[in-house]
Length: 171
Image (cartoon, rainbow, N blue to C red; front, side):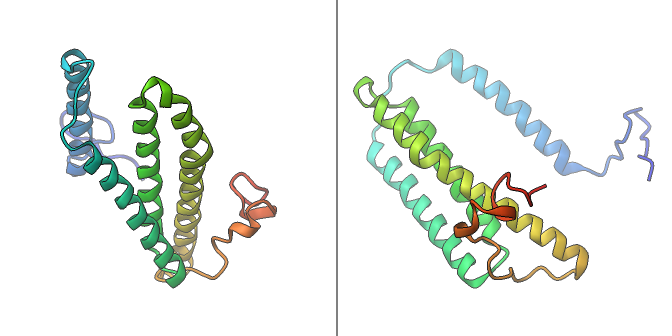
């Protein structure tokens, strides 16, 4: 199907994509905000609720992981949402652990990020990918993607054959 042309000459633009416009506008506003922060933030800042921020982030990670476990146990498609959310929170946690670490704590933060948070996030993203791929295949085949089959996310098989990230069976 050929893209529709609008009267303003933009190829492929039909004027019916307000979500696209909103997302691009939000990204551009975020770039402006990043530049502003880069120019105006002080080099040091004492946070009034430092412990609440970290405990809150870690609590959100635990909740997302428990929800992902529930969704995996119940074989629910919402597993993709919970694993992608948990993976993203782990990446945010690693980022702030490393970038806010004092000099004496920097090595520990990097080791924890590289040895724990980043690999865990990659596994969670791999699970997300597997679930979404399965749902896409199921929706094409049956148009019914409510339940996930047993063994879809079997970490015991991750190192063997087609179920590993980058394995023989992965596109």
